[in-house]
Every structure is written in structure tokens, then in C-alpha cells.
Amino acid sequence: MRRSDAAMRLAAALLFAGTAAPALAQSGQQAQGQGQTSSSGFQFGGDGPIEIESDKLEVRDHDNIAIFTGNVQLVQGKLLLKTVKMTVYYKNSGGGGSDNAQVDHMEAEGKVYIKQNDQVATGDQGTYDMGTGVLVLTGKEVVLTQGDNVVVGCKFVSNSKTGQSKLDGCGKGGDSGRIKMLLQPGSQSN
Image (cartoon, rainbow, N blue to C red; front, top):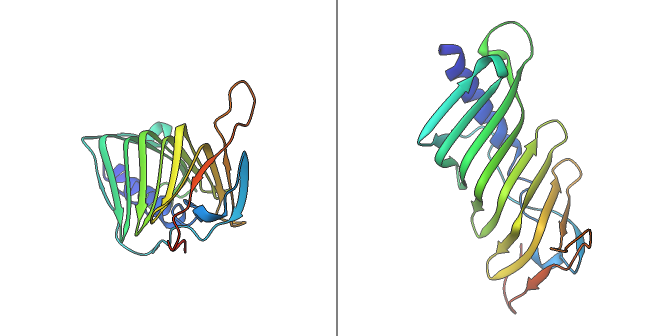
């Protein structure tokens, strides 16, 4: 049981040390169909304490996963993540202790909401791969906001290692569709 607790703490720490930076592209730089931009995104304090709350936690040590379900809320500094279910996949790097567990990737399902300062990203599902630094947020609508500026699409991909982000529109049957953007005059998009 002690191993599971330590593995969960490590998983959460690693997850949020690297996730937020790529989470939001600057909304004013997206155009139509598919947009690419360099992302300033959320700023994470990787050393800050992480608080995770949920209605239920299930740890499957043999499968190297931890599943948080029901009103999941993660807070680190000014960063807030809310979702219905969050699964953290971790791997042991040898040595047999939970201190050697490292997060491989995580999945969030059901009304994913990420907020820091005036930046918000929402979608139906989200994944983050620690190795590649790639965040993917998908859904019927993925909404990215910063202040009063809003960009809507259906698939947001952001790479924290390259600083590149892409938002795909909501097309049907293989068509990439179009993204929607609303920019408010005088609004800051930093």
C-alpha cells in the first residue's frame, strides 16, 4: 500500500510538471481549418505542491496505473485541471521501490477543463505523453480562450518540446472543417 501512495505522488508530480506549458496556444494566432502557432501556453511551477481530489482512487500496481474517478480536481499553483476521470500510466525504472516510478502518459475523460490565469482549454478527452511532450485535447468542441478571445475546433495538439500547436476544425467524413475564432478589439492575448 505504501508503494502505491508514493507512486501516485510521483505520478502526479511528473504529470503536472510537464503538462501545462503546451496546453493553450495564443488564440489570436489561429486562422481557419487547421492552424499552427508557437505556443506560450500555461506556465507551470514544476516544484510546487500538487493537490489531487477525487471521489475515488483505484491503484493497480501490477498494471502500473492509477485511476482517479468522480469530480477529479488537480491544483498546482495557479493551474487547475478538472475532469470526470483521470488515468495515470506509470512505469518502474528499476530498483523495486515506488520512488523509481515514472509517469509514462495520462488520459483524462469527460468534460476536461484546464485553467490558469485567463487561459482556459476545454474538451471531452485529453491525453499527455511524457516522453514526447505531446498534449492532445479532443471533443465535439474544443474551446480555447484567453481573456475575451475564443477559438473553437475539435482537436488540439500541442508539443511542449517544439512549442508548436495545431487546432483542427470540426469536419465530417475526413473533411478537416473549419475552426471558429472570436477576437475582441483591445483584448490582450499574451
